[in-house]
Amino acid sequence: MEAKQTDNKEIKDFVSVEERILKLVREASETEWKNNRWVILGEPTPKEVKKLNALLGCDVTGFQRMVDISAVKHSRKKHPNITEADFCLIPMIIDAADDITQGKYPDTVVYRKTLEKEYYYVECTRTGRKRLAMKTFYKTKIGG
Image (cartoon, rainbow, N blue to C red; front, side, top):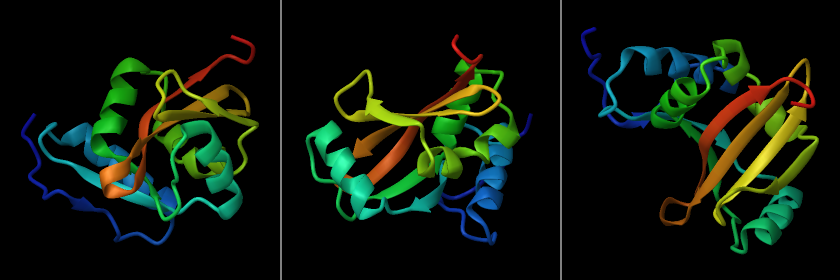
C-alpha cells in the first residue's frame, strides 16, 4: 500500500469531534507510522482536573485531550475488535465514564464505560506539551 503523505498537524476540518476522530481513524489505516496527525478533544472540566490531579500526582490544569494516529494504530493492532464506530464513542466514554482509575503506569488513567460491551480508554500525560493523550483503547465482554 502506498503511503499517503501528510504533515504532522491537527485535523480541524470537520465540525464535530466525532467526525474528526473518524477521519483520523480512516487516515490511520492508510498512513505510514512516520506521519502523525491528531484530534484535540478539548480541555478537562475543573471537576475532572481535580480528580486527574489526585490520580496522576501532577497538575493538569490547561492540558488538552488528544487522540493521535500512533495511538489509533496501536489500539487497532493490539485490539482488533475495535471498530471505527467504537472510536467515535471516545468523547462520550470520557464525559460519562462509570469510573476513572489510576492506570498501570503512574502517568496513566483509565476511563471505563459499560454499554453493550465494557470500554476502556487509557490516557497518559505529556507534560511538555500539556496534553492528555490517548495511549490505548479497547473493549471487552461485560464482566470479562
